[in-house]
Image 1 (cartoon, helix red, strand yellow):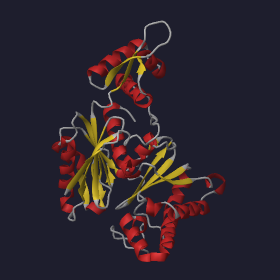
Image 2: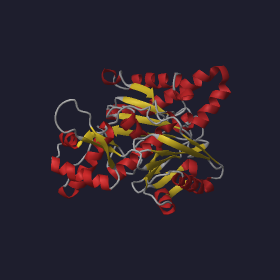
Image 3: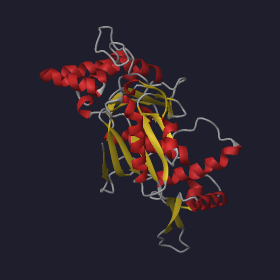
Image 4: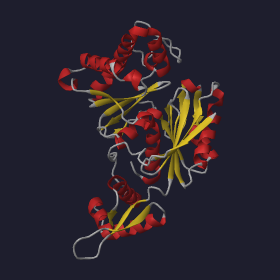
Length: 387
């Protein structure tokens, strides 16, 4: 069963801070220069807002002739609009301001990480959520793919503007072609989610692990640093990493897959993967929530134990990569408080105090929209080169 809401508050999607640009890891080749310059113009307008062509030339370092040519091209393509004359108090001809056409296209974001509901949103180009739809997670895993396709079709039909693309954050290990190599909670192996959705929709599609999508939102919209780890807790547990402002994917696309790391030799809860004592068995929202409820007055002890297990899993990563902070995304009533405090204490006892005593563990401020906005960043990056 699907449900939907349409945002009525114009500022509903603007609760995040100023964004920044992911660092380029390679030099721009001559044959890619024009595409790079287009992205540079769009990225500058995306983050800084309306400005004149002369302003763009100064900000980007491109010549005025190049800027004039690029702006004309981007206006014709429907990505940039003129916003009228700049107010001037002195002599001279006022400059015409140009800006990203933030309302001219829509982005579809889908988050498949929830325990009970799949979330979907229709967003403007600057990340404002204008409408929402969701769908129940089916009890039979064989029905999941059909439910996701149906949710995506509903969102595209409700966009009321050209759709720039569809971004999906899903649990599991996802390769660079949007194939879900494994998602144990869905019973998926080698599921071409990107290809399936692209065949069903008249729009570009990009699929990534939900935690990898979330960290893009935290970096672009949430003011995170260049060396961070995001731990995403929902039906499962996953994480993602930025090192020097660059996402880490891993040789097998499984960087950050900490959910099935064994975090104790003292047994522990049975995990869906078949092992005993996986971090996910301790920390996943359904498992942890049930144990907290059963514990009653001893709930804080359960949360501290889960936080200690999280700290055990994170300590080697913090030591190896010299991370500046850990961001937690998931149910605040479980993660914030005793669990986060225990994770910090464990990290401090298991890492080099001189360098890592100041590491910060905090909740994201983006709430349940973090994967949806991260999916939007994926589309912006893939289609416009904006991040």
